[in-house]
Image (cartoon, rainbow, N blue to C red):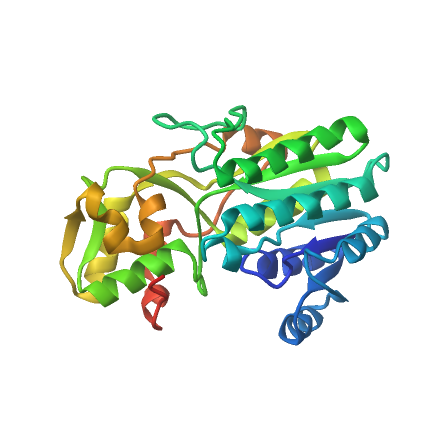
Length: 307
């Protein structure tokens, strides 16, 4: 297949592209910069220049493809405080791609998340998000709209990713937590730290996206979850050991001051299963788990971001 990939040079996309090429697919990647274009060309992909705001570019590239994997999201804007704006831009991009694929039977796979699906219990692929009026709900509504494209002749699927997609080169949540621990001189967790985050290695996630674009039935919900839930206290202990700093509890009311923007996420208890995904597509995660990956030391080789 000739697959159009947005976010092709990003953290997940840069693993998805070689996964697709190694499986014999052609890849057309969206690139918004010269550096991204060069990286995609070096990986063996064709390049389309543009951003998620260039709706005409998205429409034409989707229409010319045999399928689409949509990974792009304005994370820089989202984490600077305008998550709603980023989510609305994402919805426009998804609607444009969906229109281009309507009635074709071609696959359309997007990335979403598992966090917040089922507070207090293990979330499954059958759980549907609840609209609570938050900006996160806007993005979840976009995922629901993609699933609805199944009724319009699109083989649509949603891969709900773990909040922790870890691996060498990660600059996300875990790298930020490392940076905060280094800056503060303590490795912290909120409350008793028993709350759990699902985790998946980005190479395992990349393989799931390939399986989805190849074979996921229309309207499928898939969980990019390798580990059901890793206690945040355990993560903090590994970080503390590697940095040689104390490991300590941070009171919930002090979380925002200590962890900055990460404080709103770090206290979530959001375990999730992958049983239905494995049964549907035969996906078997094989890469190291989060604590083992942290133990390799690459998260501590360079200065990690603090916010």
